[in-house]
Image (cartoon, rainbow, N blue to C red; front, side, top):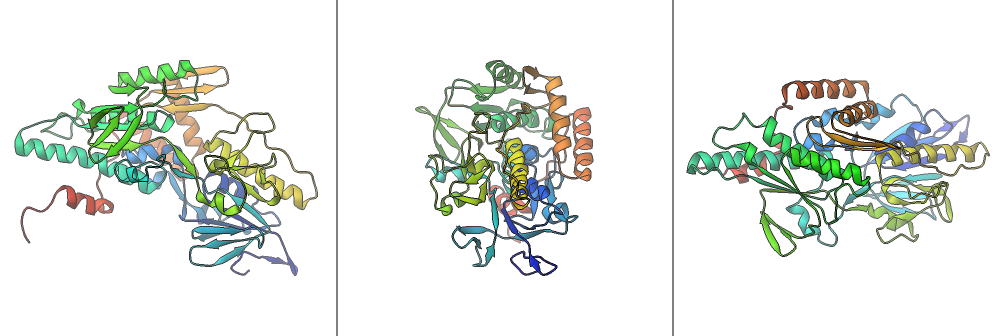
Length: 439
């Protein structure tokens, strides 16, 4: 087999499928092609698949990164026709049918599945990212965890040296599921996990504010679920600020309307932009940068190129816009794989139909909201359902057991994993605590 992923069988070159992105869409597309008569090469900038729905728990120190991430090579190892390349795709030549890596290497394909996901969008203000990081990767989660823990450490240091215990202020921008989960988890961190760890400050006095520009949080949920989510957040002490558009972010403060509000940590949880790879296809994109695709998930005029997940704009065969959710990307990955096999077996392609299995968001310790068809749950029943679903969807038996045991421990003790600031944040720690003596 050569570097492009060709795998000769009995002297015949079988079709080459290149998958860009190892998220839910790309991973399940690869799984759908495992042990079939195609040579599959999955390319990703990371060597692991990240279970993004639980990233916020890494950011809050409840779980460790290894409990929600799995090696792509290990996941795909059982299938002989699946191979991985650690690299970054920077361009696509649809005429020559190859993708270009950032080191100049070219990888040829007969079929291409683009599942490169999305990144943070700051609505034309990318400079805000330095002061308001988003949450998309393991590195983001570790950075946010560092900022949160360092805020408490700085406050403790100041209180010990000056005798002043000033309440910390945390701001989460965006009232979607990620913002709701982060706000609730930060409140839990301050009021439960860290309450006994600090002696000079009262962590329970920390102020957690959730800012949403619309009239209610969880705008894609029903009004009933939105209201119950807000009530549960307020029970945790979170200040839910709706109709509050954040207009500027600066070090140590944000501007909401015309008012500047001091913050110790600001987290961005609103706005996503599709991978810029969409623009290298040479086809039209919508205003947000997504590629409008056909019912079979292919790009208009290029039946050999499939675009799925956050990069795709699609009204499915049921006439409904497909949401940018992990469940939708997973189903699209499976469908793209089936349609490639349909081509090879000379069968007609199938239109994509999104199966909505419900939506759910957790809100701190044994609180959540969930919608499954006409069933709307909240509180402990929704939290139990959320826990079971997320453990089941985790990749790998070891990760499922580890997460389940950690949650049982956290629930029983009202404490998460150790709130460590590791060497990964050494530079930030040195900035926060400059040495007062020479060595």
